[in-house]
Length: 138
Image (cartoon, rainbow, N blue to C red):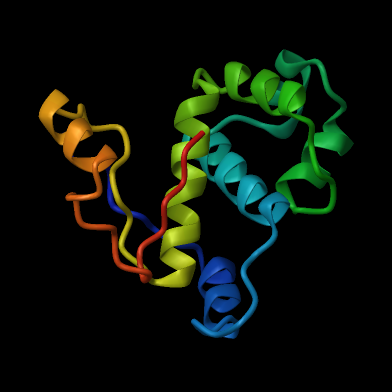
């Protein structure tokens, strides 16, 4: 199944335009906040609803979504659960977000690997991904 196409808000596009390929990499908290806010809005849920389901204050969730606070993995997991998603899906969305900002191809690390390709990789006969690729694992 092919992942859904990425739609940017006007503010996100402006933020991306300000960052060139050689510019700074966005902070994790900014990307995480963008992904969480997009999913909450996609579900047409309020900050108050998601915050109360996750067991955090409305103000804290708002600050996380705006990239002002860096949430712990436990808080992120609680927010993801309240959005009906898992932490792995959330991290995959954040990974795609980083790739979009850096304008680099994303390698799918979730595909099954054949046993003989593992052997080839361990003996050095498998080609190494080009340096323009991003490898991320959660």
